[in-house]
Length: 320
Image (cartoon, rainbow, N blue to C red; front, top):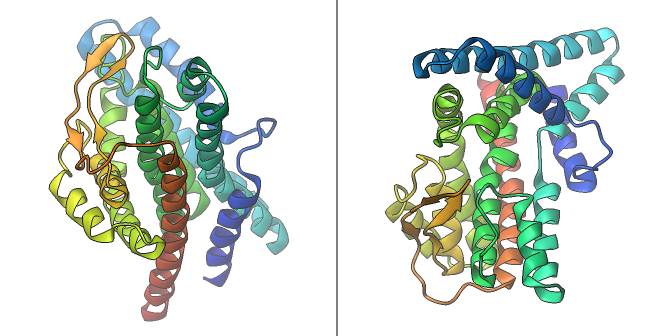
């Protein structure tokens, strides 16, 4: 029991220190390559919308199944020695987290907004969002960055931590496969609406509890940081359905309320204009510093989250 808890905590701390070095052979890169390879084969043999939906299900099972099985085998093989097992478990859990990486990417955008050109800021933003950044204004760039950090606090930190506590590194990595599938094929445009149908729906299910937990943890973080915790609760509850995703409005609402800004609205994805309802009240104009404030919320949320999960895990094990 203690070893499982230690590996998760150390994996979390390792992420805070190292982040995601560009030279590191990150498992998500290989998951992405597997997705593209299987997708290519599915499209080669399946053409109609119905066939592509079935093929999308096959794609999901192959990718998630291979990811879980591979990580499970690695963990089992590492059991030859406690030190090897601990090291491998820590490393695998570390790869599922993205706290420092999220912060670093957001800070890059913040710095470019302050010292660079608007075009450079748009380019920097395009690396972390799916929307078209070509014509975004400065405030829209800030808003997109805040939204992305808020949303990714769920799938980049809280969800993998939760699944790691439940099923160790294999389940956390399986979750990352689910999330990567959604980010690569889970779109509703003409190209992916059929083959990505299963991936998008299962990602919604996988994030259902983590998104709501993240929202609550963000509310607590808001009070701890001296932000508007009361509004964080109010907006998250009031605007929780103001998004096409059943999950995204929860963390975005908590952040919008805590900072007193308005998020959401119309964006362009792959040339298609997508209207999104607004989240939060515009008590003031959004500003560059809100990127740093959102980063602070993300960090404290992650800290509160791992403490809460560790405490609950300990209590459950004591009772069992």
